[in-house]
Amino acid sequence: MRTSMLRRLLLPALIAATVLGGCSTPGPSLVGSDRAAVQSRYGAPAYRTPLAGGGERLFYPVGSLQQEVWAVDIEANGRVTQVRQVHTAENFARVRVGVDTDADILREFGRPRVTQPYSMADQVGWMYPYLENGFLNSEMVIFFDRQGVVRRTENGPDPRFLNDGNRR
Image 1: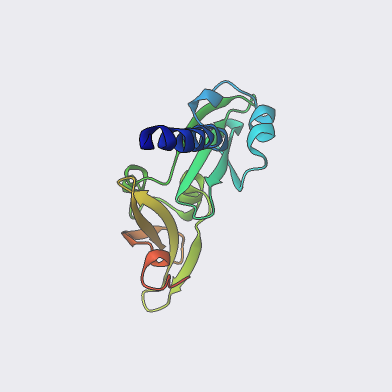
Image 2 (image 1 turned 90 degrees about the horizontal axis):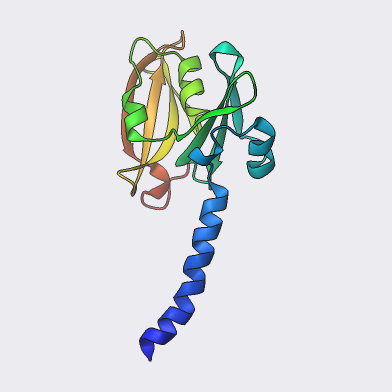
């Protein structure tokens, strides 16, 4: 009897979560679609940046925490060529200290959640939240010098989830 009641209550919730979750996140099924189809389904992107060859990358954060951000690459002809989640440990590991610039980082990850000056080091840090290993609320900080060159990266816990939420 209890099993039957649980099924009756949980099944609709699981179906709704699956349907809603599938609608809100861009994915590989968009490859080959045109720009109009992407924007009619997901709306205006939170950020866009030009790509080499006349293309463009559109950024779509999922939820208000900005831990999951999808990049939709569109060629100059207006067709989607790639869709991927960019706020991942694997992507952050590809940041090249001393080589990449603020323009490279914007193109790869979109706008940071927060920027923070570090006057003692004469640098500025850009904070990007993400889920490390799929469940740890983490934040990658990418530090730039005055010329906009990456000088170091650091990851750690997202301060929004520490103590009272130390909101920055």
